[in-house]
Amino acid sequence: MSEEQAPLEYTSSGKLKSAHYNRELVILQQELVKLQYWIKEQGLKVCVIFEGRDAAGKGGVIKRITQRLNPRIVRVVALGIPSDKEKQQWYFQRYAPHLPTAGEMVLFDRSWYNRAGVERVMGFCTDDEYRDFMRTCPEFERMLVRSGIKLIKYWFSVSDEEQERRFRVRNNDPVRRWKLSPMDMASRSRWVDYSRAKDAMFMYTDTEKAPWHVVDANIKRHARLNCISHLLSLIDYQDLTPDPIELPTRQQDPGYKRPPITSQKWVPAIYGKNAVEEA
Image 1: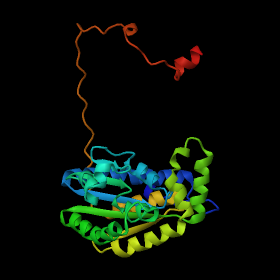
Image 2: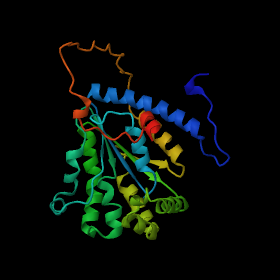
Image 3: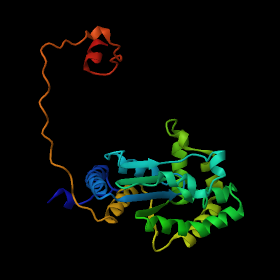
Image 4: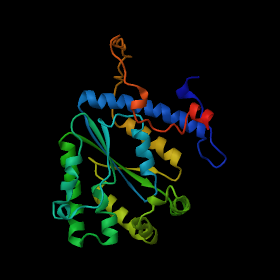
């Protein structure tokens, strides 16, 4: 039985076991590398949007997608709070410079849909700005598609109970606590408001040219594999992985003398075999 055909095993709670998850992730990441070569060679312009509830696992999926890829071909865009100047621009203007050029795939960790979500719920935009976005966004995305951009939109759906569990895990872990922002806390207290905003957003922007793809994100391992697998299925690519390169012979020069090691400032070897032996 080949690696791709090996049976999957799940825990008693229905979660894919770690060894099987890691095996499937490696297989999918190998396919992502093939996709990367294809995008570069064919001059494709791929734009992938990741939206969803706070703590739904968007960042984890993005990290697994980019883990083995060339950042010059596949890059992540995660914009912060707009500046005063950007607030005076056409709304989509701050996003346009980050769109992919030929031979690129861009992953938006949140996007122009901030206006339909957090800005709407938290009152960061006016009613007129919100209504204008809902009218304009579908046409903006149709323009992107007509220009040759492959636009893919993912919404990560997570239950109320699972989001609360993840928030508690972050709050109890000093290494993860930075992930909890005031907006995250507001999203908990305004769960229904965010649900209504998401429903309205889908009603206006789930179009034939740029549909939303919903990812069940209650189990992170499954969400990562399902999303990557689906992304790969949306682009008809071929394997252009180059053959191994013949390494050149290292240059030789008997007359070259390296400077003494003591003339350089070395990083203290706190870790390593010699460091352990000397400790």
